[in-house]
Image (cartoon, rainbow, N blue to C red; front, side):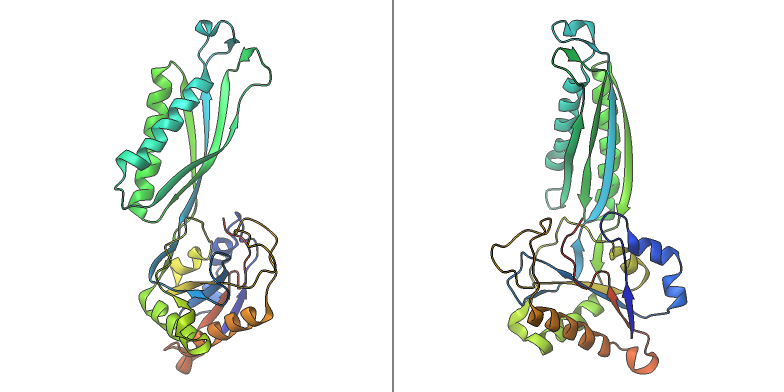
Length: 281
């Protein structure tokens, strides 16, 4: 049994760096398991299911270039802020009208930067944000459509648009065999009533997915106690309950002990990627 302590989960992709650095060549393993604290679950519950658990994470930066002008004389320029609004609408139509409604996907603009005074239409607008998806083919379609629509919309208004699209984390996908083992371990340690099998996939992201691309495994979501109000994952006011943390460790330990390869090779790992995590990307 191997314990892996992984740094830089949030946005920096520590798991990817470890894999690229030869983690599994230096420490050969059969399967990987991780656990993510999840405030949305009732205390003491474990979410376990096969398939996509968390989304792929992509980021983008769109630079729209128009022509600056006086705000009272917009006909003398090309307004990139107007273009930005039209592109935002065109992108959201990808989700609502281009993709299959059954395919989960999100395009969120989180930053818009343009101009620095009241009476001047700026020359450029910078837009940044994130894209989430669960299926590889949906991810490909999103990137292609965003590129295509940004360019066409900008050209319609006489502007130009340059999209820098970065694929950051793959989707976190749990393998069937390892998920069954994880479910059995949680039921044995904490009882069948603690296992949640119908929790929808989260559109948050987790770089443990890089390890799951290399080795079959699964990611648990579990719930530790919070004293007071119940913050969501992006908030910081969390306190762990010792009993909940102990159950999490016990479930992982039993999970690994039950792995088929453990009796012969002692090579099955528990992955702290992270073992107890307070936020997700």
